[in-house]
Image (tube, rainbow, N blue to C red; front, side, top):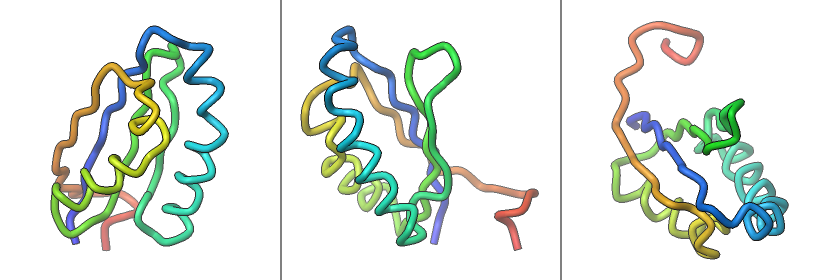
Length: 93
């Protein structure tokens, strides 16, 4: 399994995003409980969020994002997926 970092940039409609956020967080929690989402959370400046997934490939991550309420409801300006080679840290065995 590979690790992927996803950057989400929030769109301009903060009110809509905040309305969708509870569903997004339930979805994220379910992925975390499955061991697919290793970490995730918003940037301190409120401009977006970063998430770290473990998945087979980029296509699998894209499918996870496609099912995310944030993406489904169109509250993101953009997303970027990058494969990440973790070399050191508690996630690395």
